[in-house]
Image: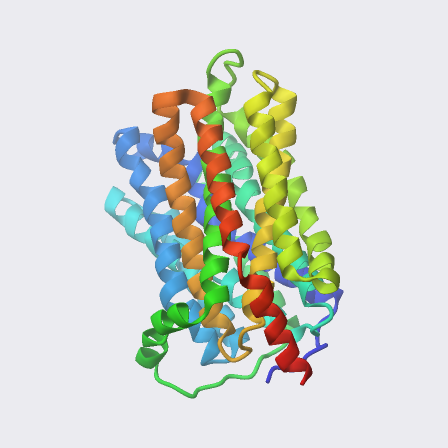
Length: 398
């Protein structure tokens, strides 16, 4: 059992910063693609594979590396991964060919799954009464990293070039390594099985745990609706009546970062009222956001308000779902989180695909309708969870 209550505000801040800086590596290349295409003299369609394979690497890392947290001491895993992230960043910055750039970004996505090692570590260090609040605080870094990466990378690319963004990320990662080495507490490794056995246990675990499956559906659909919105926002803003440049979508992303600060509030609701109620509140926020998009017509103000609400609902629901699955087994938290994050990623990929498909056929109204339906589908996941969670709590009490 990991030692609880060995966590303070400084450690929580370090965890949040680490999550933000590392997860940003998955998204920073999205605003660098056109500059990369110019450097290697290839088309914009071809360069898109960079962003796709970075996220593919991230998904594979969640499936194959995150479960290692159930076998080995987590701080050591985090430091090892951060060193590999540094090497991948340098390889990307000095790329001399398109193939080199593809491979280095694939590896960057693969190794940058550090946040999904940190979250189970935070859950293990927190007391039962404060777990939701602490997970919510750590999640702030994730949201800021996801939304802030696109905005910052665009600015750096404009003034310093795309390679500079990788060097800047490399410098900050070195700083994070130093801080983690000094301040992050250790966890206890549990080497009770071989790596092959660990991976073989993932599918039976998914089949066995009803709460895990439902949490995967819930956040998969919520993150899918979130991705659908942010993927198609640039299309909406570039068309009538707005005719804005793509940079405006990045600026609205900064507004969405404000939604990150809802996660500690949801965390407190989780601790006091339960994760199931918190999920319901989050889903309602996302439903309201898509209703605003549907009913607002051509209002930029409505889009900004809706972007804040959809970010609040999605990111806070991630914390609520993690609180649910972390109750299932302390010894299996890394595996539970790995399965959960792969499902979340797949939902996001589905949302991005459906968003572009809906836009091509039905424009903004079609996009908003699909997003609304995805959130409604997420609601089906909470059926039957409350009774199961209550039985788990009763077992712990007895």
